[in-house]
Amino acid sequence: MADSNKSRVKFDRGNLDFQQTLRKRVDEYFTNNNIGKHANGQMVFKTILIICMVIGSYSVLISNTLPLYGLFIVACVLGFSCAMVGLNIGHDAIHGSYSTKPKVNKALGLMFNFMGANDYMWAISHNVVHHTYTNIPEFDADIDQVPVLRYQPDQDLWKVHKFQYIYAFLLYTFTSLSWVMMKDYVFFMKKNIGGYIKTSHPTKEWIRLIVYKLIYYTTFIAIPIMVMNVPAYMVILLFVTSHVVFGFTLAIVFQMAHLVDGIDFPKPSEKGEIKNSWLEHQLYTTANFSNKKILPNYLFGGLNFQIEHHLFPNICHVHYTKIAPIVKQTALEFGLPYLEYENMTSVIGSHIKLLKKLGTQKDYTTSLQPAAVAA
Image 1: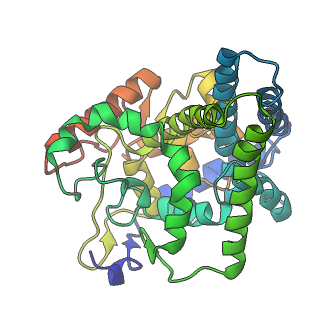
Image 2: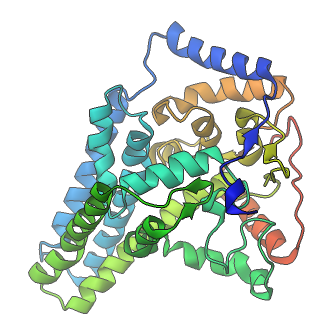
């Protein structure tokens, strides 16, 4: 599809009764219970806890008080803590769902930068591109990854893709490392990111990109090399180790939400039209997992409730457990799919199944039917 068409995707009006009913029911939940849609005390406590985890693990890492094996354990804790910052704090803040005050969201969104990413580019690639064009080939940059991973049926099928269900998980460990070292720079220089076309970015954002990257590299590479009583190569190895955990955690959460067996990859018509409304489109391209498990709910920033997040990105994730039954009931009443998996094992198995299909089948057709609910 030519770039000139990329800004012309149009969603159908769809079932207006479904859209109005869903929004009304969710709004009534908050009104009837006299609660806000943003962060509550539980979220504030979790924010403080995660920040303490990052500062604490980093401080211990550079304290020169641990044996070598202890350093690698703490590096893993640091990597997971950084992932939690992105999943729980930065993600909600950049969506504007953490606080009613834009300045608070902006301040907390800066934590993305201190974890090595870029809040400005994330707002474009995630909030705008991914949330608007979810799973639409050539428009959603999240399914346009390195060529050795075939994430959508419009992509060329190579012989090596037959094994992607094996090597994909190895590549997932490089997710955050490639992000902080390369991806942001590449996106800043690209003319278009999926369905988002922009030939240039403000000078201010280029300066912010460079300054915050330097702060990150200084904090997590330069300072440890200067103060730790280990060789520089060992610091680099510890840095990579933390990113293995960091990156794998991010990949597992985000890939399981949209790349599972049966999920849809809708293709626009020649006129750029999508057959469903935007809300209905999210139900055909998004999946939930481990919704009844306490630990994933707490650690993953509610992103295992990906359906609710895509339908209501302006609502803080601490409320997803309560609105999920409303969304599910309404979807099924109107004959729409609500794809959910009971646990991590089942959703990872479905992800592997999809990778196998996309790795061997040139054509792929969704098996997701209205009112479909996975085990």
